[in-house]
Length: 425
Image 1 (spheres, rainbow, N blue to C red):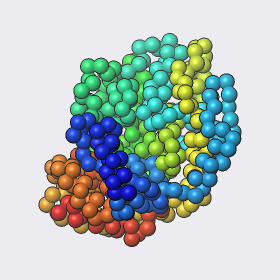
Image 2 (image 1 turned 180 degrees about the horizontal axis):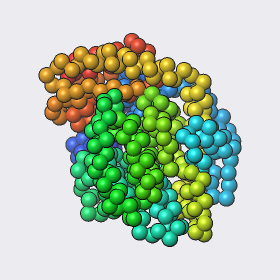
Image 3 (image 1 turned 120 degrees about the vertical axis):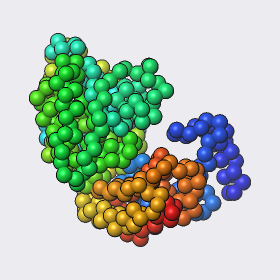
Image 4 (image 1 turned 60 degrees about the vertical axis):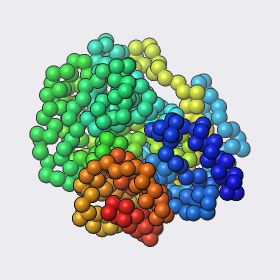
């Protein structure tokens, strides 16, 4: 087994590309042979407690029997069928489930391939909505500094051009407008001045702006900052006032991660268009969705043009079946109590990190714990320190953060938090 593992890792090193990793001298990777619950088993027999939910997705943990069964059952009838001119029960069932739980007013569901694609679809929806009304100049977007919305070209244009990892492509991206990132923290006293510049931008550019695009409450890859719900509520009011759509990117925040089913609920608002993904299938398969209001769908259709997007694997039956099962597992569990339990433990056990010289701040919201360092560490060294303690945590820049599966036990969570404390000393 050891020799076989070395052979596999050698092929990986020389030929496989990993996310945001040097193509010629990549960082070392761990060879995972199986995963169950909150644990990853490596080829050498070690077990790592997973603190990342495989980038927000595996909210029920790994190898879940009900999700496994959903996939197995679906393969017996069909793995895939085109969605052009055809439909199927898994897609219809998933659509019904989503409409029962998403914010009020969202009535149309476009089932697509990935989070980035769902953002691309939202861009097209917004542009076509105004085009159908003859307002062809409304084709720009306002996004927030520190925002991140994906790695495809339309999505990249909405990411912070400085911190969004895509500055290399600046001259090939569609120029957008960027408002200052929110600065008032989630639980801090609201200051209306925090949104003043965005308000002025809308006043000046409302004739050309199709939509504001933002990550509600939690700015993820841009710094894991949790901002005031009153900011989000004020954005909704500004969009209404200036005849601009609001697109909520709930790809990372959807399905309970922030303590609410969708982060928009913290501000009691509903967007015109919403993007979801990641946890939609419980981490089993790539799938996302873009939802919009009835008004947007009717207005686009009034032009005589269809919505101009149609992925090959749109509404893939396997993905729909497992997504449907994932929602059933979520809603049959006491997920809110689990997220609240995780939040309480993270607050208790990460707070001591504030006393460490290397630590700048500690932030917790829902099932997310963030330790921000004063300076960016040696990533490979820090990763090694964490793995040696039997945990899987993937630091990003100056951030050491965790977002574990909701099923994680207190003992497993304590191992994650203690590993962070030890690694940051």
